[in-house]
Amino acid sequence: MKISASIYSSKDKELPALIEELDAYKVNFFHIDSIDNVEVFDDIEQIRSLSPTPIDLHLITSSPEMYFDLIGKHHIENVTFQYESLQSKLEIPKTLAPNIGLAITSDTNIDVFEPYADSCSFILFMTTTPGMSGGEFNKQNFKKIRQFRAKYPDKKIHVDGGINAELSFILRNMGVTAAVIGSYLFKGSFIGSAMLNLKSQEVKSSYRIGDFMLDQDEIPVVRYEDLRFEDVLLAIENYKLGFTNVADKNGTLVGIISNADIRKGLIKNLKDFNAINPNDIINRTPAFVYEYDTVSDVLTYIKNLQFPVMFLPVVDRAKRIVGTIKFNNLIKGES
Image (cartoon, rainbow, N blue to C red; front, side):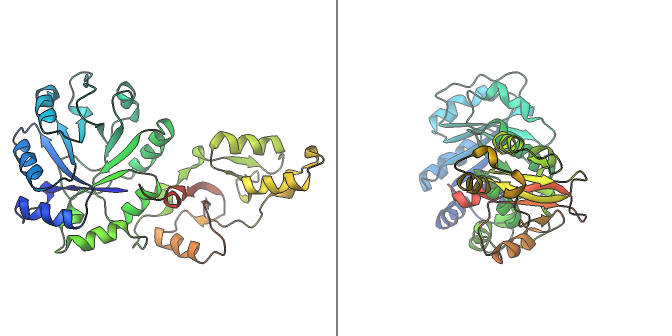
């Protein structure tokens, strides 16, 4: 996940010294918020003379067209328009900038992105109150991020607001492309320490798995009592997770069936695929976690397993299935 440093969150350094230090720690973008303030382009001009690091400009204005010429003049790499400030549908020139995004607040539905899907390559989730540095991350955005990822798999996701080391780990796992970091990056005396924490796999926990897991309506579950091989195949195909949960009539986890389990069943019954009994391919002792576990709990648990995992069923105290967490974005790496 790329780090976009919100330079106006730094209060105690002159711009040249700040840019030099951020470049030393290889931040990916310089994030600049403009609330109808044309003077930010003077700062952008100065930054251009100091560094080749790309600019990540967030425009909060009801008249974005008045900035188009300045955006072109300064060759801004990322330009984001705040949806809630627009008075009507914005027509964005195709040549305006290499990467165009639409920013939305926590209360705005992701459906507003649809009219901009052809002109925008990313969305920016504003996860705290815009313009207020140091706010707390709004947890409802976890589900919005998952919904957006499912609806627009080819679009990138940026997040701005309340991000610390733990949230960085969670967002990386969710496939977020870039995070705007302000207060967390500059509140300490050493930017380098904050950068290391944001990239770390070792995190202190306050969030629970239930805060950001895939919910029940987002995961496959087949009934054990009337299990059919066809149901298993359709569940795995329809949800694209590589496995399905198996639950009894009370919703209690019986086991899982993964692509690997199906492959083993096919190999065992090469002469007659109709002879495959789905009950015989259930993994009845799967690794799983509880919804109240913290991120640290889960990482410790995974490290002690004797096999790699790409997903884990999540259960409540009664071992009823309530969700799933997946790890494929961390396994793929961060680009």
